[in-house]
Figure 1 (spheres, rainbow, N blue to C red):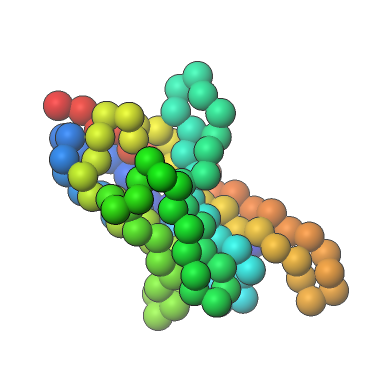
Figure 2: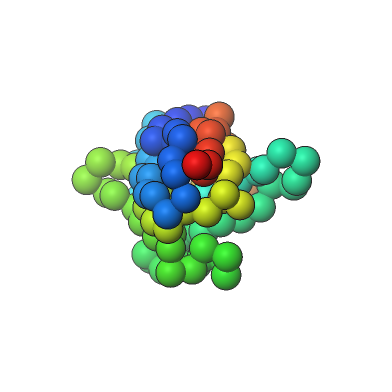
Length: 120
């Protein structure tokens, strides 16, 4: 069982920045895919950004150039640097870890979420 704990959410004005962090109970270097998802009120959960074990990253078009996902191996945490925040970025942000174990067993873990509110 992998535990993921997000932190760093809060209230910020449009154009502001926040840095989300996701602490894991196992080495994040061992996790195949890690990602940040978000869910706004009345909407489905959606992918924001993801990163593979090899360090490659993917950001959805709506956040490209503003958000950056990274694995901080030294702190054993997944981070999401969010700049140029917009009101439409308001949502609960979730950390996710997914992949297959050495014995080919699928895993998919979620954190409890952290609220990000962008408002003046």
